[in-house]
Every structure is written in C-alpha cells, then in structure tokens.
Length: 252
Image (spheres, rainbow, N blue to C red):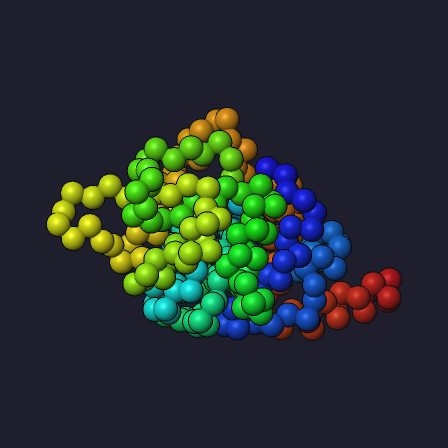
C-alpha cells in the first residue's frame, strides 16, 4: 500500500525508554547499513526480515486519552504482537506514560505518534488519518454500531479506542465513518479496554491477511526505513561504530 511521502513526517516520537540515537535512520547509506548489520547476528537479521514481511500499516490503532497507563501500554504491546506498525496516542487531558514492565520491549519496534501540543488534538489526528486514506472506525455502543466481524476492510482502517469510562469523545463520534462493537452474550456487556483492543485488533489483523485482494504489507521503502531504525536501536554504542566507519573510509 502506497502512502504520500510526507505521511510519516507527522512527529513520530519513540518512547523515552528507547536509547536516544543522534543518527537519523535516513542518513544510513547502504554501505553503512551493511557495516552496522555486521554487528548483528544472522539469526537476529533473519528475524528482522520475517517480522518486516508480516508488518502492516493498512490497520492502525488510535488511543484517545486513555487514563490507565497499564491499559495504554498493554494495547501498544498487543499492536506489536499482531504486526501493527503504527500507533497514534491522543493526549487530551492525560499524558501517556511508558511502563517498561508492561511493554516488555514492544515499544522498540513500533512507530508511535503522539498528539499532545495541538489545541484540537483529537480532531487533528482524525483529519490527518483521513487525509492519508484511512477510514475512522470507533468502538462504541452507538445505536448504529455493527459487529466487528461485519466491518468492511476494503480501505485502510484506523481503529479508535476511547477512554475507559466515557469512551470516545464527541469529536471522534463526529469524525467516525463507522461504529463497531464486540458481540457479547453476558449480563455485563463490558470489557476492559486492553481486552477489547486485543479482540478487535486480532480479528482485523487476521482478516486482512487472509484477504488476497488487500495490499496490506509494507512496501520496499517502508521496510528499508524501519530496518534502519531497528538497526540503530539494537547495537550498543552505535555512534562510536558509525564514527569508526567514516574514519575507515577516510583511510582507504
């Protein structure tokens, strides 16, 4: 699936738990990338390629003002497990806090976009995703909600999960293209957000991968960029190695 070149210029912010790298992934030439990957085991590099081949941006997850940090972190971990590369975190009243024990390292492999500076954070996020071709799908007990099993997947999906107690905001309700619900048979008819997200994301991720008419995989350019990001994050003291590479180039 092709997206505009400027799509991922929308402030991708990786968690503070990640080691900060001064090197921009896009500055890695093929020769420098090959040099750095020489410090990664063959098994690790093979795993990179296996995971990249199953990654998708056709489905993305949006978390709107999640109060419980454990829930937000659990959903992010779920996204990584199901091969969903991008997560959008809207911070209206509540700032997201990374929880290392819950994330279990999943944050290192994802592209996380945080909306925290704009006055109309939810609206900006919805409009931005729509401009990129996403259909906004919100979980809600809205009277027009359809079963998650019946959702049309012919266009890219941005799945919005709202705050634990009040659900999605009025802004998201106004911008949503469709409302979905999880069919339930009990008295409670209510799930913890992390559980609901796991059910919904697994269902959708499974369905898009089974549908041969959907181009859900990353393109070569997207894979190359993520491969570089992963390489930078998985080598200790990488700046020293990059300095050594350029020094060796001068001495040739």
